[in-house]
Length: 170
Image (spheres, rainbow, N blue to C red):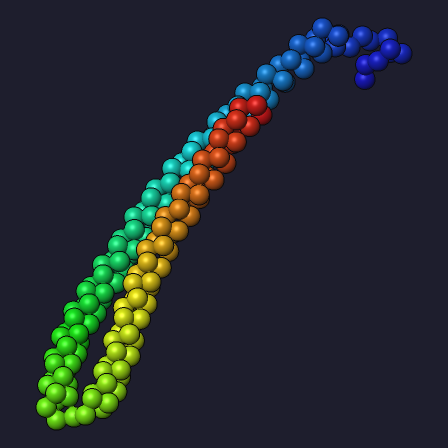
């Protein structure tokens, strides 16, 4: 063992210790640079994979929304056709009732029948309005989903920017 009290002097000096510690620091820097380089590569690969998965999910979601909108539009068209047919039937029925009122029935009975038919028409109009509101609601949900994905993509971008700023400082 070397030391101040021994007769034999050790080979370590302040200069050799300085060189040794500097060499250790350089080796550790190389090691950590390589380690962080590998981590950056893995992080970039993960990020790209997540972006690809997100794009695919958004495309799938868009296809589903488009299919739902198409189905709802088809349903609305069928409902409109059915309502049109019902209105035609109602109008024909009104004509028949007018003929009967003029020819067979007293006026009070005819008025009662017209009032009943008006209520039915109002109910049909309410149903058409409800269907239109449901269609608007579906469209709003689709927009909300798209906006939600926009927020998610924005958050991922902010996190990526923070990581890109913080990692080089480490």
